Length: 112
Length: 114
Image (cartoon, rainbow over all chains, first blue to last red; front, top):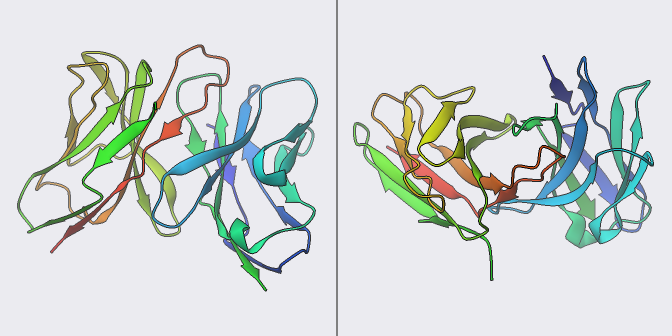
């Protein structure tokens, strides 16, 4: 069965520093991969998604993620974070169905 | 302006009462979903519907019920049988191409049962 692991529940970082949020998945078939962001008391918003093709995917707000099939990973990166990036980030996987399986989330806290 | 609306944003109920959460979308999406979010547990799927008048249980359907009488609407009822109903509830919708369709989320309803 498919599953998603976000090992880091919290990631503290100073403003303008780079950040990487880790995501690993398990699946026996090819998958689609997603990163969503959630600001406090709001719904989720799509940051980026990988469907096929280039393994480096660029999203909104300067975020990017790299699909690594051999390591079954889809880590999210940003070269320089802002205070406004403080939020919870969710990785999700879909095995070509309507359903998404979400990780438990990583809270990114950006300090001035 | 297309999107998903959930109402109310905050809801308070006494234990033993059923409560219905509203979800409406004007995106013309076929599929709709209900998730429950608890701290540290991510999003867990309660029910989903791929077409009008049809829906399937998700991973934590016990104590919940849904209906899908219209394409635009997918209300969720939290019954008194749900043992721990206090949570943040999120509704989502998507088109159905089967090609990595993203889900669009509403703003959520925070339910508190005392």
